[in-house]
Length: 369
Ligand code: HEC
Image: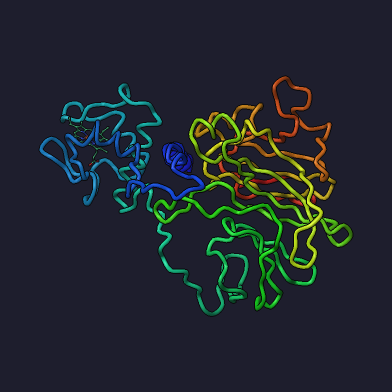
């Protein structure tokens, strides 16, 4: 798992320079396949003996298409790489490469053995909805199509008391779908949703997306709907001026629904413009959760300046879960209140892609995935 996260981190970190290609004007063409930094390391250090395609060469055996003599798990491949077999022509790599590099190479070899590559997201696979009853470990259920024509990857859903539901479509906006799914309309006057994302390996990468939607626990009484999005601007801070690209940061709003319009909007949390970056919002979280005790949590994932170091920096918003009063005030019992250089709204930190966030009602504990 850690290596998958590392590999994905490397991917996004590496793709970040391409964020500079995203703009309000048509985007220039991109290289067809992004180059995998681990593949580059393999090409540099290993290909001379094991072949460019891992199929073996004069000085070394194949690493794909055969059973590995020293074991095929990531751990065994990493161990073989680290220790080598110096008397048989395979150098030990534990001094020349870091532990992370060896592990990344072992994951790479393992992925190549399985026929997958880092940027192969397989989004083109058609959506298959199984017929009949599906049995999981805990439940039996069946899947019915309620509404069609929505973004194939809606980000969030909030069910209103009348059974209709709100759906966020990242690059389109907020949609209100009737309970029977037959009617659906775009909610007017929400912040803009931007559809000019880059398409890489079938995956959209952009900024200025509509993210989560959640009802206030007292929605029946106060009508508040919370919405998070990538608040986007151009030519508005140092990064946007240096790169000529639009930048954004996750922002939390609340508002109400009147007919098909978003009204009474209030900003619950936003960050200074200087923290806005061109980093894609694909792993930026934006999840909203309430603890039923007057607090709202907001997750912010990978939205730093193309660098995961921000996740550990208490002075910057990316890589954090924030905890606020539901009107946006900072609770005085937050853990970093009063600490020099720390944002007092931070509840926890070090989160790369907190794309899921829920509060367990009996304990009030927040869980994020
Ligand atoms: C100078 C040539 C050479 C280089 C460079 C080299 N290897 Fe090897 N490697 C070999 C040879 C020879 C063997 C077979 C050792 C044996 O007889 O068991 C081997 C074996 C292996 C094995 C075990 C294969 C099995 O069947 O279990 C792995 C895994 C491996 N190498 C990974 C790597 C990685 C990763 C790199 C780059 C960091 C690398 N090698 C670089 C020559 C090389």
